[in-house]
Length: 388
Ligand code: NAD
Ligand code: MG
Image: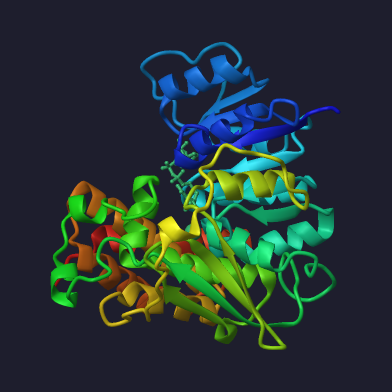
């Protein structure tokens, strides 16, 4: 059997490293044909030495030293990797709206996109869908909740409904959220939370941006929009429930009232492997086995919307449509970057997003240029934002 070529965008990140661990166990099935990173050339060079991809891209190589022979530089290398003929699968593990162009290019080239970069679908869901319809490309989610939904829906996806993976017969999606490090904190204490508190995620080890998003629940807002774009299920049928153990990764309620949940230990290796092998399951023993007794009890709680205003802001932006989801995403990215560098408080993230949505949510999002303009406008508003 010949191996399937994978272009790995964001090879040096948390998901990029997870993907390397998974593929290392299945050299008979998969190989990396392209790898990209943003600025960490040492980590990229180490991955390249190990996997010998034929295309290597460093988006921001700096000017200090020339790049190794054959490496490409600049944002264009993402699109080059995403459309590389040798790659059948593009695993997009870039963080932020910076991944959108590559997702569009890969889908447009007829590839399978194994998508960790949820921001692609939040910002440009309609464009990705249009590109997929025109070219036969497909998007298979890597995000654990959406992988769970897809697994619950097994065999029912397809047809002509709305969404990238249209599905019928669903009454409700129940998306789980760990609740993050501030799940039990009083609202007042959350508002003044420090960076080191926000970076202490109770159940997942991830990149810094998504870790802060998990603390504010912005991540869950992005995921609700992602679920809507992927499966075409209306927003009023998508619910979020807090599940601190991160064992149930999401649930689907069907029209007859039955509910199917997908469970497993919290490891991104499982959804990465599922997205690469879909619709098949690849035999694998790399992840610790699920032990129902050791993981019990499994508990569920309502979301405290008053303490986590970002979730409601994001869902409202998704429902509004047009450029609003792109504005929400860009404002969040810019605000989180400021929180990470220490120039914005934790409560400032929601406040800055609210300001940007208030000014920009009515913009149209008909094409990529309009979306990128809304994205840029939101970033500059948040950059200039000063807390009252
Ligand atoms: P990370 O910060 O650990 O890694 C990001 C990767 O993208 C790095 O390789 C970096 O070099 C590259 N990158 C960053 N900015 C870039 C840019 N402007 N252009 C090109 N490349 C760039 O992030 P992560 O935690 O691996 O998350 C990656 C994506 O996967 C995010 O969209 C995140 O929401 C999603 N995701 C992550 C997890 C997780 O467990 N880490 C789970 C679900 C979804
Ligand atoms: Mg997730």
